[in-house]
Amino acid sequence: MIEEGMVINNGEGAEATLTSVVEGTYGLLLKGVMDDGFSFTTYCPFELPAVENTWPDKFSWYGWAGRGHIVLPSGLKLGDVCFRRSDERPRTIEEHDAEWERTEIAMRKEEQECELPAQGNDGTKEVS
Image (cartoon, rainbow, N blue to C red):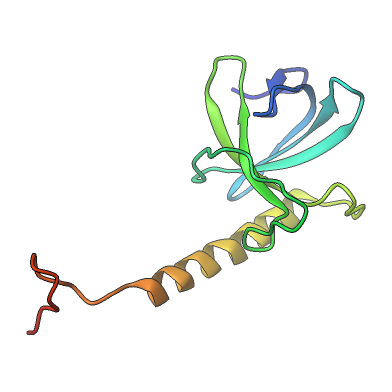
């Protein structure tokens, strides 16, 4: 269970205290305050696996500024995505869910485009 007041780790070693936890259709919208006083918002899609944090200046993962993970007090890692800190627009759970829906569509489209014809064990294309 994730709740307000819980102290989490942002996956890079910094602690944060959650000030808001909102459940949406596709994930959880978490807001909080980092141990340095900085406010943050992150979105944890239910089906997104945790990966190493990737937040370089020009990184964009399907329109998100970054992808990574958070760590709960139990040690469980949850995958998360977020927008740039400089993006001052307030983002609701509905906006995050809509963006995640677009992300899923883009991932499926890319997956379909990358599918190769089945190949035999010797690397040759199977013919029906």
